[in-house]
Image (cartoon, rainbow, N blue to C red; front, side, top):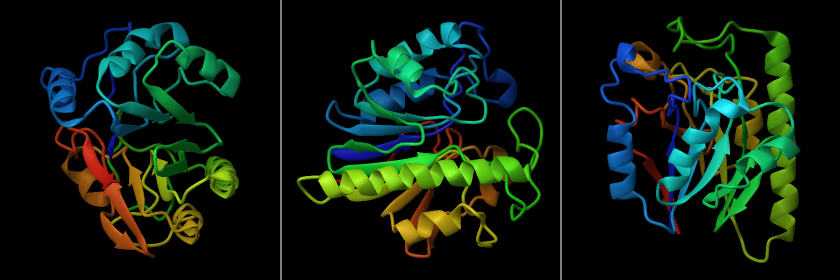
Length: 246
């Protein structure tokens, strides 16, 4: 059993919004081919936000079906473009119920799947970030109140993970999955890395960053005892990235 991650699938939704103008030729067909070749039915795939261009639940069902048809069990979390996600965990459970391969979703909560304990949140742009690309696929404005809210949501998810860990019949490997980078190439600690690193996950996976400048801005490697991995679709060369194996 293996754990993979892919972020920023940016599926077209019923709005038919394609990625050609960003240079993602034929998307999501290359991702589909790589996913179907690499991932097995017993594997787990974290889908690290910016799942779909849908703006409301009625527009996202085709994209959720596309994910459900891919091999492996999926754990979903919200990105900054996932306007369809909403704020109700109960409504999300209802929305995801038809898709049998969905193992869970992170929404101020944690997910146990196989030998992995997965916590996380969306996060947000932070003042420690280097200059970042703007535009539709770029960074969001820095909002202190949004950062504080995401710190709280991240801590709630970690608290839920610790509670689930106590009840687990066997040891679990801790994983953090977020959308925005919690740490950048300059390695300046952020409000988010200060929460993640004391939790001591084996790996922290994130997405959000695109293009040469954006991808170069993310920290990849070990910091504070945590291995950070960037899995946005173009950074991952349009294939789920392997993170761990049991």
